Amino acid sequence: MEASSKPFDIRRVGPAIDIAMEDAARTLNMTFEVIKRPYSGDCPYEPPVGLLSMLYHQEGIDAVLGPACSQGIPAAARLAQYLKLPMVTGLGDLVIRKTDVDMFKTLTILSYNLQKLSGTYCIVMIC
Image (cartoon, rainbow, N blue to C red; front, side, top):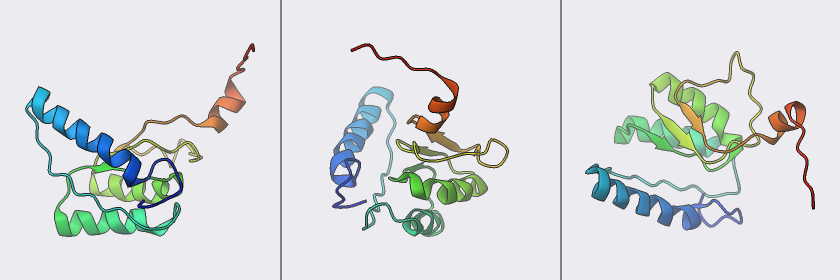
C-alpha cells in the first residue's frame, strides 16, 4: 500500500526491500529486477489479486513479495499457486486457514497466527 496509516506500507518496507536486494547482489552475486506496484487504500481486498494477475501477464514476474494485508492473501495466494509463483508475505496473522483447502504450496507467511496460538498453547507471562 502507499501512504497508509499501517506500519507496513511501501514507505516503511520499501527501503528494507532495497537493502535486501543490494545485499543479495553483493554477497550472493544475485540480481533482481524489482517491480513495485503499491496500491491505494487501507487493506482493500481486490488490488492484490488484480495486480498480481496484471504483473504476471504484462510484466512476466517470477515471484511476489506481498500482499501487504492479510485480507488480500487468500485470493492472491490461490492465484499464485495456480500460476506456480512463489509468494512471500510478512503478514497473514489474520488469515484463518483450513488445512485441506488453504495450505497454498507456493506461499510463505512470515508472521504468526494468534488464533492458532490461542487454541493450542498456554502462554504465561510473568511481569
